[in-house]
Length: 126
Image 1 (cartoon, rainbow, N blue to C red):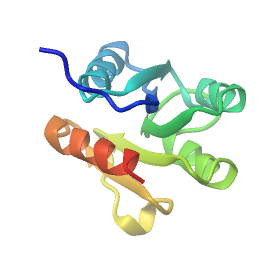
Image 2 (cartoon, helix red, strand yellow; image 1 turned 180 degrees about the vertical axis):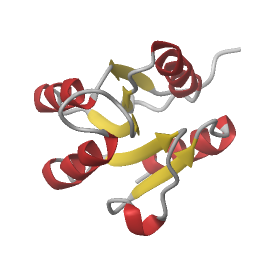
Image 3 (cartoon, rainbow, N blue to C red; image 1 turned 60 degrees about the vertical axis):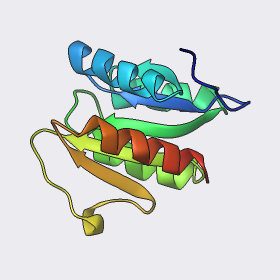
Image 4 (cartoon, rainbow, N blue to C red; image 1 turned 30 degrees about the horizontal axis):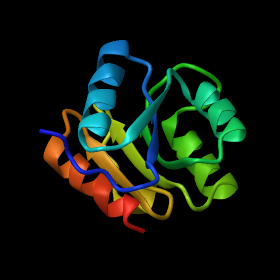
């Protein structure tokens, strides 16, 4: 059964260094009707964001190797690409709204896929 998809795909950049978790996030995003673009760390994500203007949501883990982590990536996205919505996840840290950049949402791992899917749709409707 094919889902009806709105015109103009919503692109989600998934930033996750663990390959299995990244594949699971890609499946979640694609099952929700979005197009997934993958990055294995925040440095790669910044390069992708600099090259593409169609990304609407960044879905990032916090703890990753590289020169910046997911929280610094989220701050950079909010500063350099203000229209992009942000979902932040972590299996090791807990964040409050005060810790997060404006218009971002935190999910502790393992996250509830239904809640993440609902958040993706809510963010895409703006």
